[in-house]
Amino acid sequence: MEYRRWYDNDPSVSEAIELLQMSPEDTKDKATDFMLKLQDIVASDIIEKVYQTVKKYEGKGNRWYDSDPLMIRAIELLRAAPLNIQKSAAKKLLKALSRDELDELQKEFDKLETEDFDLD
Image 1 (cartoon, rainbow, N blue to C red):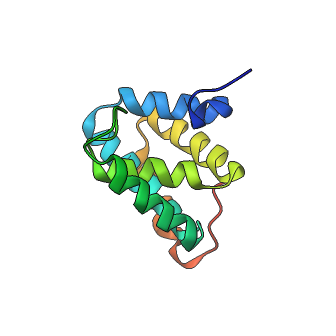
Image 2 (cartoon, rainbow, N blue to C red):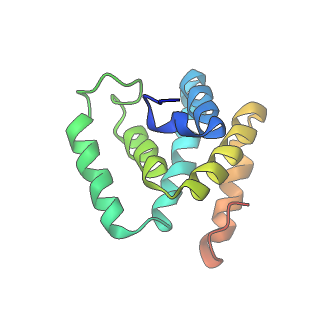
Image 3 (cartoon, rainbow, N blue to C red):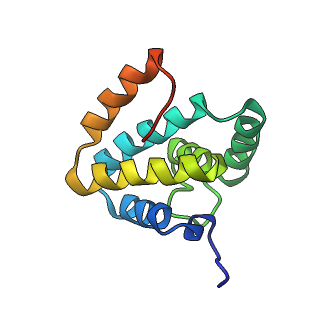
């Protein structure tokens, strides 16, 4: 089976991105904050590639998130993360989006500032 989009490689990541796309703007903002926390665990060379991608597509691409620079960065960070991090983050995001629990998810990340990053 051949996939067109990077997030179609894993059903949970695909479902999370599609649910995010259909979410209200305030929910998208909270989800963006959650995904931006991934930069704390992604290598700096990957971060540089993310910023290059943001510059390339910001306001110019055809994807639903290309008009929002923070959302582009958040999605690209998720894309650049290792598969195990993508899957774990997607599961957390799905749970939060389906139950509108993004505030609780943010609190969980706030606690992680002094601990190792562990999404499971």
